[in-house]
Each structure stands twice: as C-alpha cells, then as structure tokens.
Length: 224
Image (cartoon, rainbow, N blue to C red):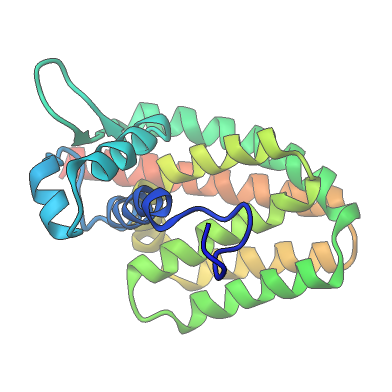
C-alpha cells in the first residue's frame, strides 16, 4: 500500500468497476441508455479506457440492482419493464419508505435536515432532467438513512433505482416540476417538526400519486 493511500480505501483497480457502474447507472436512470440498449463489453471498455474485466464486474453489479439483464444467448442489455411491473415496485416503495421514514424522523439531526434541504436546492437549480432525477433519488435515500437500517436502505435504493427512470417523466408530464417539489418541501417541513407519522404519510401519498400518474399516462398513450 502506498503512503498516500488510506488504509482500507480501494485501490484504483478496485475503484474502477464502481466508477464504471456509477456512470452506466446514471446513463440508464436518466434515459441516455434507454431500455433495450445492448451493453457491449468491447465498446464500453473503449469508452472507459479500461479492460473488459472492470466492465464485466460493473455490469454484474448493475444486474444485481435490476438495471441490466442477460437474455438467453445475448449479452447484457438495459432492462425493460412494463407498467404493471413498475407499479408493483412502487407499491413496495410505498411500504418500505413509509416504514423507514417513521423510523428515521426521530433520529434526524440538524445535519440530516440540512442535507435534505441541499438536495431540494440542487433540484431547483438543476438545468437538466438527469440532474433532477438524481437529486430526487438522493433525497428519498437521505430521508430514509437516519432509520439506521442498512438492509432496509439497500432495498429502498434498489427499488428507487428501478423506478426513477420511468416515473419522473410521467410525473413531470402530468403535473409539471412544481407539484412534486411542493410535496418534497412538505415532507421536509414535517421532518423539521419531528412528526414522523406525517412525514411518512406524505412520502407514501407522494409515491402513490406518482403511481397514479404513471398509469394515467400509459392509458392515454394507448388511447391515443
């Protein structure tokens, strides 16, 4: 281990799959890599100026997150879900995030509230859909983090990752940017008041509204 490398920190070789994973995850969630896109290892290795080994590891990690699949006799592709599958995941999010927020709010310190506020500012200041998606995804994770339950947080992150790229577009088309952000500010205010029940009910209502808008948008596309 070099003098400058901290004990326990990953080496550059160990960190490379994580950097590739994070960038591909961002591209998938924001639609830069749409559902059904093939993820060819040679092309990705050239893009990231890496060998196929870290690329392969990054794709395997994305597979465990439910963002990438390996269809029979094919390479990796960005996973495609229908509206029923997305709604099932949103139903799970309603249950998980409601439980987590109820547990989290009593543990919230000033630093937690400041972090939530900063994420809402990042959403307001974002000038692209990808940045807004990322800010709100991190807001929901930060809401649940003070529950201090690592396994629960991982489940919430997984389901949030799998729904973010589908739900933001339907929500923004249905009600615009201001309505979701208003929900987030009301949730934050309940957290400031240490009202876990209210915060949890607001989070659940927010996700349920997203689900309704997703179904409505799907129905209108079919009717159109």
